[in-house]
Length: 195
Image (cartoon, rainbow, N blue to C red; front, side):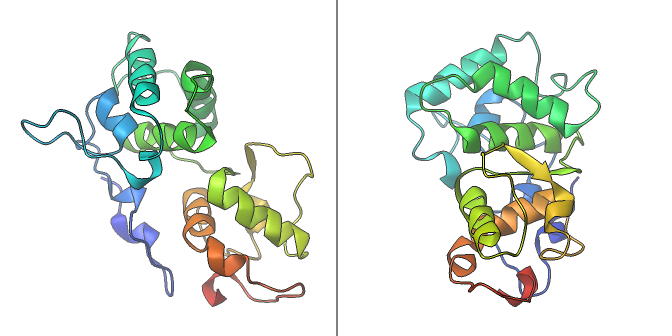
């Protein structure tokens, strides 16, 4: 089981924390895509806030595409050495589905990774809120990013702004603290803990 306290550092809070998912909670691709276990008797799992705007038809297509690989949640990472392999594989399966964006690809990859102990280590994945936060941090001179969007950047890019954080926790905090990060002025000298 992943330690839920990894999401919580001093002055850092979260309302939804993906690392609180236990390995045994998400057993089907439907649960992976929706982000929650399916309650007994429910038509489908409760939707995680990240996936609420994704059309049901896109979620169904993603579930069908993942199911069509011949794998299960517990076998889909067989032969993979790191999260980057998993992310690239999931992107190749569901990334072109209309209505599935970078955030859904990342969340599905992360949930599968949590279930199989294959988490991001060397890269921070930039999509939606984390991408907007990172671009602002670049624009005010706190970090260096390529001008052309890439889905991930080395974790070391954030080493001064997010000291001691894992790749997953950096992504998470860039997301939940986006509004505060966007208010940071040029020349800000603190860290994520001061935001």
